[in-house]
Length: 326
Image (cartoon, rainbow, N blue to C red):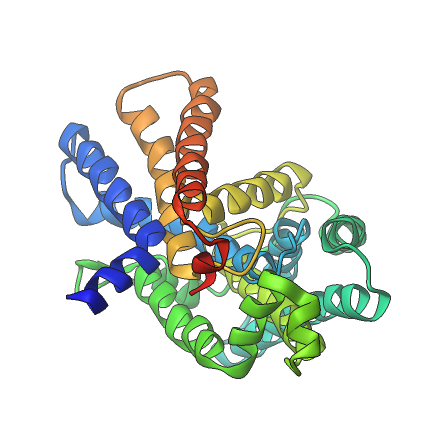
């Protein structure tokens, strides 16, 4: 019983985000003209998975106490790159996907090198590097356009057995292949230790530099996966500063809604995924109830404020602040 209580307390943020998402999505389905259909669920999933991947990319630096302001730009950069490389025959397109994933990882590596070797503040560093990445994206794709291998795009945005959205399965595969091994590894524990107290972690022999480097590389990789899926959804690439900024800010909001502390040392990418689904469901609810799009920031802000307030209440209730990291 005690173990169950501790588990629930430890995962209170993600569980609360999951509960809110289920409630909101149930309302959306109840008022949607088509009801619970495969097409409705697949369309909603394909939109939400994009933000979920960028939110996962944001979660990793946040766990170490930093914020990556370039995740949205890497997302857009890899979208532009995929619109040029993920084309042609199936083998050529698969090689293109590999190249895009490597490019995203290299962008994350650049961020990690600057943050670790230069000992610079992550937010400022990634804001500057993001401007460089944006310039590269504009060079690759000066104007919107491009294409993507149709078989890959149809598969990634379609359904399995005409029921299960493939995008949801791809998201689950990414969680199992990237997040779970990282969280259970030495470097995953090191990332949490860095976010809790980096100096203490370093003195204790925790591989802080290697963990930070890996965090930013994986962040770039996750953003690149999202960029490829965006290309599959739109069949094009666009070096849009507006899209990059929106995804960056929404990724931070999703991280907070999912129960991850912006101070670092506490949180999970699973919660960020649910946070992303909540934000996307807000858009769907506005559509169903025919409300003005300008109301979206209001609802997003209210949900974000509620999430922050719940997290603050948890901090104030503990007698010993070290209990937060147990």
